[in-house]
Length: 321
Image (cartoon, rainbow, N blue to C red; front, top):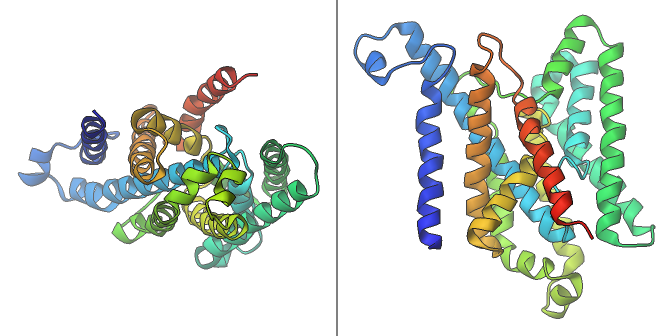
């Protein structure tokens, strides 16, 4: 049964990768492209739509895996990068670069996003360490507060910037997939490789941490070291994704839950399914975003939020105590 589900999800994912690039303001037929298509259509397909599909799939898969790991680490079904404030920290770092050093943004966006993500992680971890109560709930609530603070600072940058910087910040903060050329399409691939490698390497530790810190420690897991490595590595992964796509919320919440319902809680297999579902979901959402009100290109973050908010409320309902 699980093998059939794997084949089904894999088929859907490859189907989305194959079909979505042909869909747009003007649908491009494979026959037109191969037999008599214009040079402009070929350029749009190979230089815009294919790179955009690659970036969307990579970013969605990476954010989904990051959400899966956080849910295991915090034993909280609602933990994910944007709710924990890490995406907002990365967004703040990148936004500061766009606002104050636009000429150097292309070179330093990922670096500043990484330091922003690490700053958010440091604040949340330090705060939780000195606050009594349930550590997992404390981390989640602290992340929500930090996310709100950083979002407010980004709005300050928008308000105080010039017309060009303000518009760029506004469109970028909504989340968007923009890639021209294969090289840009591959820019988010390191994010997926980092998140996927860490999740698979520490899959056994994640299985144990999901059962509780005491259980993991009794089985020989070095909790502090493992969590530190995962925090740093995932912050780097989120920074790369956010620097290229902007902050996209809820994807790290949706993909792991759908995957867990399909294949169970074992994290080695769950990593693959989460990547497939997250990548396919963001790719499909991006296709909807660029075709629904064509020629207007809606930020994909808006489409994902329309799906994520009801899903989040549903999780709150089923996990009520």
